[in-house]
Image 1: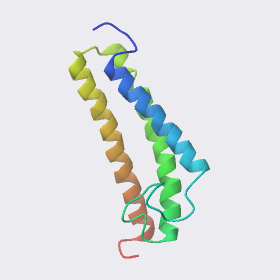
Image 2: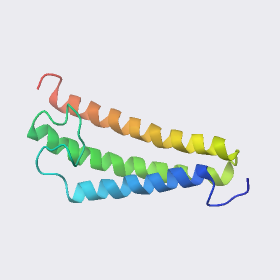
Image 3: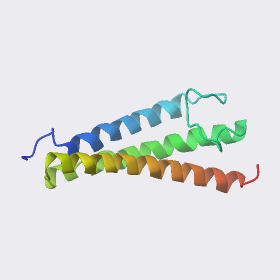
Image 4: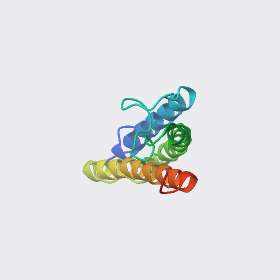
Length: 119
């Protein structure tokens, strides 16, 4: 595989990183005002009350922007490491899934630290 922008190890982290950043900015600028099941950071902990909801929306937006930037930056790996296409695809998807897991972990931990377990 030669160095191209079609390398899945570049394309997947780059495009999903940009989507993370864009979604983070949109949620930061236009956060959902009320608890809903359609738009926003929606987990059991974040939907317990309005105060948690508001905190989770802002915190998750900022984390999404940070992790999206990191994911986009990690796409540079696709210029230096040129595995077979299937391997590149699995690594790219793995990086994207890892960022989603990190996002969930960080936001849920922040909610728990701010509000405790029994709120």
